[in-house]
Length: 436
Image (cartoon, rainbow, N blue to C red):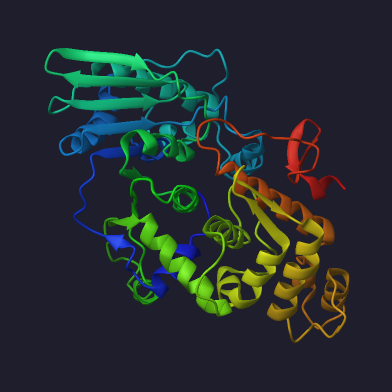
């Protein structure tokens, strides 16, 4: 999951200077949660050991052939922010399954058949047990193809194993605090190992790394290995292929985060006619806020506003965000004046995207929304328009996400009082406007 999949394509249209090749990097971080979700079961997998060796040992070993350190990271569900349960519940509702596995149930002696395996991976309790098995087999049986290398398995704790000519030296990295989601854990290893390749296809990793690089401009290089971003022209050609044509295998590319950040900053500056900003960190936070207007795992997209609309209106959105947001360099906290954001940024967005239907001169969000409801737009479009409360919730959600992605070694605060746009209803987390 992650951010809207259209964003990387928009960025590729701006240029591809952020794509690099032939880098020299001795540390690789594997988002093994994705590796698990991509795993498969074969008839020859008659034990968990065989399954783990085929799906995990081979990947780690391939990286160890060239890299000195390989970090294998999994989600620790006990520490995943509770706000993620909104997205998790949605996925469960969409991907209903008959597979049943509860806390305390015993794992089978071998992985279930592939058709059951796909369903089983929708069950968090089952996945948590499987990750424990994978971690134990990795730390007890894996051997790299060469010595003088290191493997770290980051799950509930961080187990480091150094493979030396004299044998193995293992330790628990006590300085590493408990963290939940795998895709935020890479940040805490950059200070230790400097340059790092992050193997993750989740698009939100691009933003998390960009924010980190903004906070630590002198840190090592961050490279993201992800699916190749195809230009729109190539995608259009793909759509015209015959339905029975074989699908090509996925291609990968390496993205240099510093180069990506510089290119996107340059595009933003050009859109508002400036050449420099006072605070690069604030500018990056604004960039991320703008991207998240189109949704992520923790927040909803703005109704009836797409990626292209946001990108094409940067000249309006960026100045508005500079005006209604702040960034504290000392605390690294990003804050938004919510009411100002609604009655400036949101007014600007909807009055420009729907300029033919907004007639009011003295603009406020109430007036804009009233004009839209009185317009010739279809009833369906009108029913999907936001309210003040839904916009307030979304802005607070995004503010929380931006600050969550700045937590480098630990867990974020998750208040249910509505300050972050989330609240509890019937003991379930919901967006705060759903309980107004």
